[in-house]
Image (cartoon, rainbow, N blue to C red; front, side, top):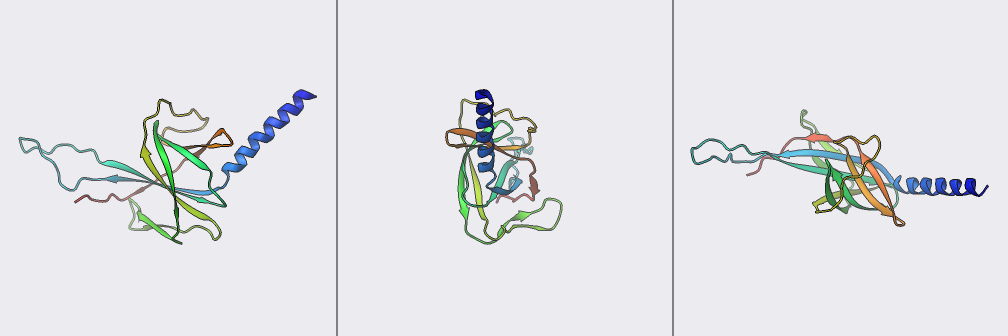
Length: 165
């Protein structure tokens, strides 16, 4: 009997942690390749290949307060998470890569929008192994009552690049 009570207690705790992560109602994830404005050349005048920088743009739409997310994992690389509240009722993110259409985020009435700002960070840790997570997925990691929890963002939308001057 004690064994079943203990199993029931553990199950309830895991459900409670899962319920806490459900404050996220919707995620918006975008990728933009930043292209150089001026093509660099070597001493012979030949163009030097420049790999564009990739920017990840992430917004979370939540109901109530957002939990303490600390680390984001993208392709095995850790980033420190800074959450910034968005006070505007609509946010224009950019234009879709293959269409002449603006991407505008408008949260539902009563929900709160947060911008996820990522900073590179050096950690002596590897990306957590989570069943069903693909290498291209974004993993948000946080703590709730001293327990780690994870939220996976599966889909990202490509935006048109911004040309540097």
